[in-house]
Length: 129
Image (cartoon, rainbow, N blue to C red; front, top):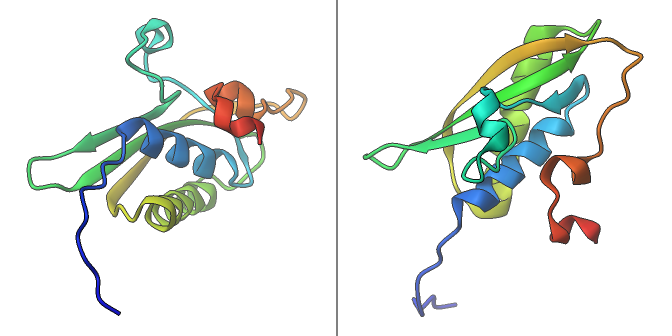
């Protein structure tokens, strides 16, 4: 089977942010994502809801994820699970390799607080399927 290059495929950073955010929130023990600054909540340019991707000049991609975890879980184990889930999901869906995934635990949330829905986190039309 021959492969011919017909054109170029460009994946928006917003798509990678959504994939990263969904992968992180599906890990057991993660309550929600959290913006690193109040200004990010108000800014229209920061739509990642706690996911910050950075592409360096040499083409490597790194992710910083700010999370709130559920009280009573093993923080290092959940953090490593987030790193693995994000790397796997982004590579499987977009064939983009994320070199480093930095997990920032912002807060521990009591068990009584309900976990937000993924649709509320990203408010995207394609999540209605």
